[in-house]
Image (cartoon, rainbow, N blue to C red; front, side, top):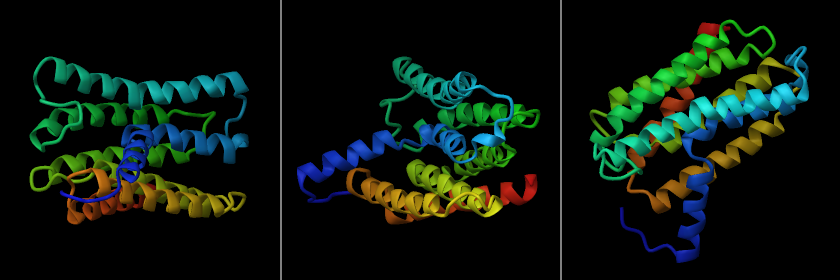
Length: 212
């Protein structure tokens, strides 16, 4: 997708795309729960909570990203940026495995918010649906990830009266920034961005009512 945006704006959009990569979304959501619902982590020390945050990053971001790196080094993909639909198939499957594993573990969590259960189930469904839709269009993973975070934050804010809706407003603004950034620096069409955004919203909503 060609655009004539200023170079500085493109750099900023690229920076936003890196920082809010969809693989980081589970870590962001866990951190959100840490700050807004610390009393839900019953019996967990601050150090243990930080270790849990690191483990979420390790399992949902590092390992999937490392798998993509290996696929690139082994010549299964031409770029680590997964620019084609074909290149995204195996990473989708790998990510689905880790997300399902996190959901499976969350069902036995006694010292963490139940919200993690619906969130992990939601991102698993989103990835599964994304893999199917990938056969037809190159759905935006960034849009899918940030909209999933948006809906999850909204649902938590509704579920717990103690959570201020300012978190939702902030995440809404962040979602607009991320999608705008992808419009500037990616080759996604508006349709691909909208479909990705819709998948993220819809799957978290379905997971919430299914799990809770």
